[in-house]
Amino acid sequence: MPRVKQYNEAEVIESAMGVFWQNGYKSTSLRMLSKEMGINQFSINASFGNKQNLFLESLKLYRTKLQQLLKTFEENSNGIESIKNFFYAFAEFSNQNEYKRGCLMINTMSEFGLEVDKEVGALISNYAEQLKALFKKNLEFNTTKDNDTIKRQVNYLDLAIGGLGLATKVKDNTAIEDYIEMTFNNL
Amino acid sequence: MPRVKQYNEAEVIESAMGVFWQNGYKSTSLRMLSKEMGINQFSINASFGNKQNLFLESLKLYRTKLQQLLKTFEENSNGIESIKNFFYAFAEFSNQNEYKRGCLMINTMSEFGLEVDKEVGALISNYAEQLKALFKKNLEFNTTKDNDTIKRQVNYLDLAIGGLGLATKVKDNTAIEDYIEMTFNNL
DNA sequence: CTTAAAACTAATCAATTGATTAGAAATAAA
DNA sequence: TTTATTTCTAATCAATTGATTAGTTTTAAG
Image 1 (cartoon, rainbow over the protein chains, first blue to last red):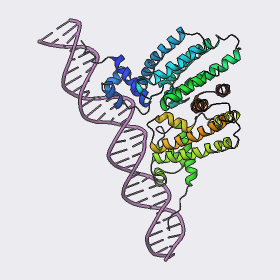
Image 2 (image 1 turned 90 degrees about the horizontal axis):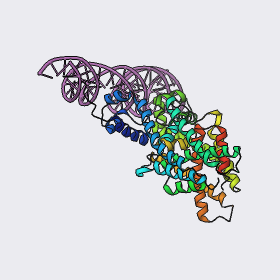
Image 3 (image 1 turned 135 degrees about the vertical axis):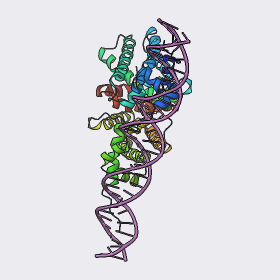
């Protein structure tokens, strides 16, 4: 009986994700989203409820993309060099298509700080923990390191990947490469 | 003849700076500013023109505060350890009064990316160049390093201080300390 | 004291925001 | 074809935004 949806929800989330990635949450209006997604505000509401939830869905999609990098990382876990390869892959992903948008996850952390929406915060934390587990796994390939050293180096890499996310938004590729190379001189 | 201003402009900028530091530019409304500054919107306009210019004045004030850290850094320039001391001073400044507000400069870089207002961008760039010069000066205490190494290490420290600024907004003090310590293991 | 100039108060402006509504259009089951 | 159901269009809602206005109060020079 019903009329059929003339858009694909997965496709329009992809567009929404791009707008949020480019502009951040607060600077993205429903009218901008409506235009880029090719559907009107009513349809956004019908499919996603509200702006906040559309943002959450966009972040989920972004996470599935990062998940592919994590999968490669996981499957190529042979120590420090594997972590470094992930750093380069992450930088390349953040800089794709010559855009300077940084990382949507890290942009969101920076935009909201500790006052982030509960579900958004949980998604980011979950991703961060997964990544830290991979850092730990690869650091432990060097069996001479004690647990405390591992813990401190995981913290170091966690903050370094945050710095890298920020850098991909505002720094040139030379500086980014220098940063990654130097970061792994210390491990 | 004229009526006398009942507020001190330097004092109300201090308040405005605090609000921008806490909330960022876009999330700070003139009504929030008016309330915190203790003067009404008309007076904000009379003293500072508009929101953008008040933000610029706030950033200038912030810079004068950072300048004190740079002064100490400059006066205690004895090599790597001096840079490390600056990192700790910077982290402490960003975390003052138990707030988790990060660094107003770095928050602003993250909020606007490359599409930052011209004057704001110039202020930030100027500060960044000054800081990088101090990094360079202290790295050169080790005379065995060639120019290319120095250049790369300056880039490393530049991005590392950015990452630290972000971290002071979202990470706990243990992680921050681990990060700083590890950062200087590599130099 | 008078008065001109500036600062103040409070209200309001147009524009934009996220969200919603009323009604028209489309579609598949009966 | 009819009809119930959903989608879609376009307009509109109240709230908030940055900015401005009209009118009052204060102040110091003359």
